[in-house]
Image 1 (cartoon, rainbow, N blue to C red):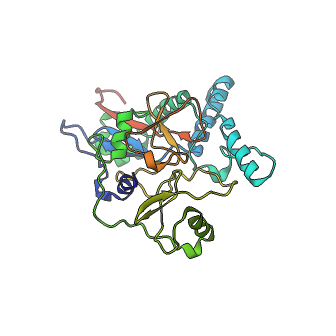
Image 2: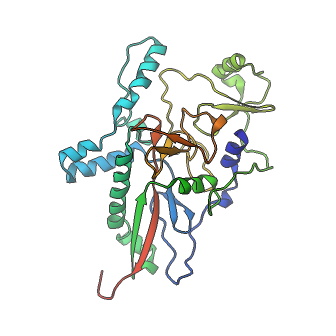
Image 3: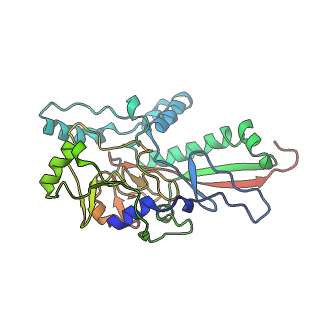
Length: 319
């Protein structure tokens, strides 16, 4: 499984999707903001939806919606109760509420505690906002004068399981098996001498300090690996350390997607089915086809949207 994960991390950047010109005579599809192209008319968020994005959503709802609806879109902060209790127990201190969602240093960490219904509602709201404020803006039309005679609309939504696999597989055409490239990885061994905690961990797991150790380029249950022999292992984090990472952390996939593997598992269009694994998922059993079942909101569950674009020639006399 390690070979698949490493191949996914280090596939050449030249495989990334590009906006394809249309064969129908209409202009090329513009890229919706915040996305990369996966297929001819399939775009995916570059990164997981973050707390800052959810705060923007809530700010709009606070101004434009009933109080009951606004409250229904608040993240479930109780997903952190078990995490806080466990950390406190290990540290020997009293449990304290985890400040996460509204804490400024965590603004660009993945939004969690989000339900399937909330995620779907966010994607729908985002579609309306981008259609009104981006595709009709003077800046957009100035950048794309070829689209002045067209109506451009985008629909954001949760990806199907097949679409997610297509993006994670990095083929641009469909679900793909990842093949380990023969080229040497760009990953460099960790200088164990500068990592006293890691040195102690190596002793505990029975690995010599002389053996090259690498950091796994994903936020999964295991953080490190050796290549001769291939072995994945984890080191206990400090009890107070948050298990989630910045949404733009780690190298991107071949398509330019951050954390398509690890950090948080990502909801799909099928309620109860997530993909990609999280900080709680072992790399030992993780494949592009694997899924993670869930019920309700979780501390390890987030999402990203996919988008499709529709271009229609304007009728004479319309704006």
